Length: 282
Ligand code: ARG
Image (cartoon, rainbow, N blue to C red; front, side, top):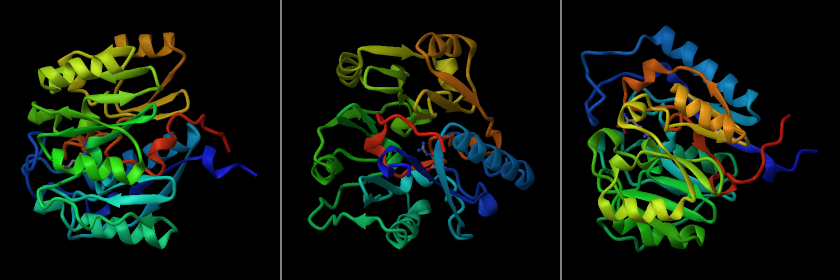
């Protein structure tokens, strides 16, 4: 029997209805549509790479009304069998939170109520990462600081705010990728000065990526044990990861970067705070 707590479960949404129907981040252009065949092949390969690294991959259909649904990370924050549904800042994605909540409750997760949350609170899952015992939470582009108290209360963890200032890196998961409780890939150019100070103090061994490296979406990766599932791995980053004992697993998802999302955006972590738990191969 594999203990559930040691498994690293993820949810991927089928790419069937993925299209660029609006432009809500600087990467999206309605004139540049994904190829459905290539998108499906990349999505299948991503699932295989996650499984190969020891992840447990759940898949679910997407809905034609919500063409960004292939980025389910933004729809909820999930950990310990419970979840907070997102409060999207963009109406173009608003309905995805309800669809995520339906899938999660239908599969045994319990919803954490948000009654009493500030009206001004928005929260998108791409802004929430676990680093050691803490949650890191981006704000300033999509999520708002008003969500942080509720987020901390929901999971009983300290929330470290990170103010995002570069519209190209509009979710925190595009500028931070925790590797373990000491190390993380970081692109500090995406944060304001105070957040830089705070985060660089918090991460004892940061792997600071350049703007050019960050533009490859290499930070928007998924870590399973010592595997780092990435859409691109600049050589310098790969060397440092390997020196630290991590293995880059590269699986391109070029069709999805047309939507401004990378591998972490496509992969809803179903147990966010368990990230430090070693993966069990099945
Ligand atoms: N088109 C999507 C949006 O703009 C991409 C989501 C990327 N998600 C992420 N976690 N960075 O909302």
